[in-house]
Amino acid sequence: MDFDTYQKLSRKTAFYPTVGKSFVYPTLGLAGEVGEVVEKVKKAFRDDGGRMTKLRKEEIKKELGDVLWYLAQISTELKFSFSDVAKLNINKLKSRRERGTLHGSGDNRSIKRQKKKPWVFLQLKSILLKREHHMLKVPVFH
Image (cartoon, rainbow, N blue to C red; front, side, top):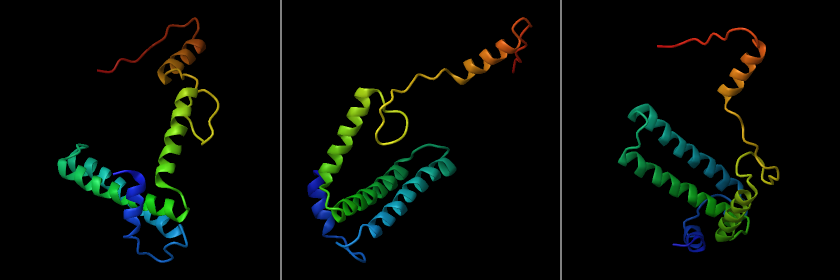
């Protein structure tokens, strides 16, 4: 099923206050559904030792469907084609990849991410500079 077909079909099940007049209700619903996805993942750690059981995966799949439904309603309320939203996102990510700016924050990233030196390297460098001519004692853990 393509995004626009999903958007049209899902709209037939949209029964909420101010349907067609406001994006607030579906936005709040989206936040709740994302919370439910997070809860299912949390319970995998709490109850299943971090393993994703078949049942848990099915529960998450259902919640992701609810997330998709709310995204479609917000898109409709704002007069966006759901496929246009998807295309815009893919184009944005492709541009970031080409510019080397997938990491970082902000929508309009323009500065390439510099490779960071590992934390351990920076800590050792700091210690060595402080103890330039002294013996370095490194604790050994067993």
